[in-house]
Image 1 (cartoon, rainbow, N blue to C red):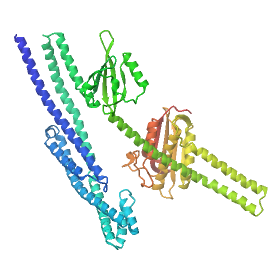
Image 2 (cartoon, rainbow, N blue to C red; image 1 turned 60 degrees about the vertical axis):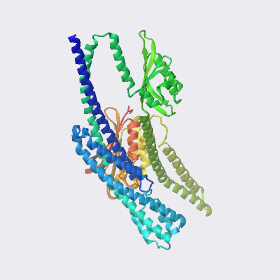
Image 3 (spheres, one colour; image 1 turned 120 degrees about the vertical axis):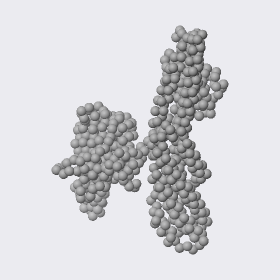
Image 4 (tube, rainbow, N blue to C red; image 1 turned 45 degrees about the horizontal axis):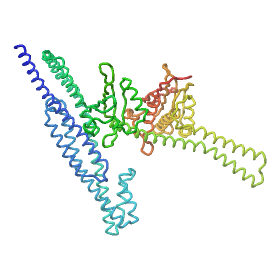
Length: 628
């Protein structure tokens, strides 16, 4: 009796400790996720501010902006009061105080932006109304530039201001128009200055850094909880085993079954159980959240009720063959919710057997990956846009090259034809002269035809790998760009091994054109006309039979502050009218994704013909089976 009393008392005591620890842990978990949500809300609300800053003339709901300001202040107030920040995360407190000060400054500037934006919107409406009533010709250009002020970065505000002040006012309409035009220029400048001040705060990066530090703390937090919970669970399990020793195995199994059921019911995954004929027998709470179906609506229905119709019969045939053969199936579903919305699910379906090995049921465990697929689609669309931009640049290069290479033979054809006509008019066209001039026309016509044949293969759109010779490929690139090198007096020093590789030749040509253009632009930009301009190309196979292509110039290299950014999309060191910033990015994408290779750049110093030079060296490494 005493033994049982001791066991029961110990069990109750341990249960009390477990409850206390659980409550305390839940409190910590609530504080942790509440803090995490507050930080995420700060990040999202800051993005709303940045969206508001992106346009000075578009319509903005100032009430929403004001709500966001109140929201920021409320969140910061909650974080300041957080015991988690003041106790466990005391090391992050200085960072948060700094963020708080930055938000205070940003809110002050946002308030000023609101007033500037409101004035701008009013003035734009006034000048539009005035112009519609009295569309004077002398106001037309001013009106057009004011309307396109934000859309056209090339408009010079000071020049526009001067033009406005020069207008001679002849009517009240014109007077009001001019006043509002000046008002627009003043507040447009003010809006841009305020926007620059806000950007200089670098609040976004500070927030991201703070969020990252906080998330890093989650590992420590979770490990601490794991340690405590595991310790309690182990002690509790031992006590439970001792306590259950006095009861039957059936009772023990029921307890374990209930624990498993609770875990499944509260799982973050979508869990569904069907019978042998795929009639739904069980779904957990998360299934209801994602599908929109109530449990009472779905139980007893066929699993096919979720089908979207976007997956083939062969897909479901393979699924059925796998699970009815007693194997686990893994794959992705495109299903639909009760509201007919598409949902992407990563799923694992396993058969459940009885004691004799017969299939009784099927257990499906699914994870919603809809957001991930949407993000992937957006990334692919962005990549497609960048690729199209890069192709347009390459097409421009091709047309430019053709025009230069056609100029001389076309001139020769024109001269020969004029000579035939002139000699004919003066009755001095003998057979020798006629044949000589006709041969010139034929030779130049054949040259033009050959040029077309050469260039039409440069940028094929087929995606089939084929064997091509790297020396021939590089010579095609030189033929395309030779006129540029001649015009800019650039010397090409090349050393190319006779190597054949398998891949997409036209994409490698596009990548090399981008690199050579980058090199020749750098020499043109950084060197004087009198300076010697050099570009070196080496192509060879290394010890592991990888293709190595090195391109370097003598244009004094790339600024160390930006050298790590040159492969980023839309990053360019050129003026906006001269560069798009997609060439090197697409080169990086082609080499890394289509050739599974690597490309990198570094500044190098070297000696050539007893003279020391400095420049940028691009290296391409393509893993492939080289054929010599």
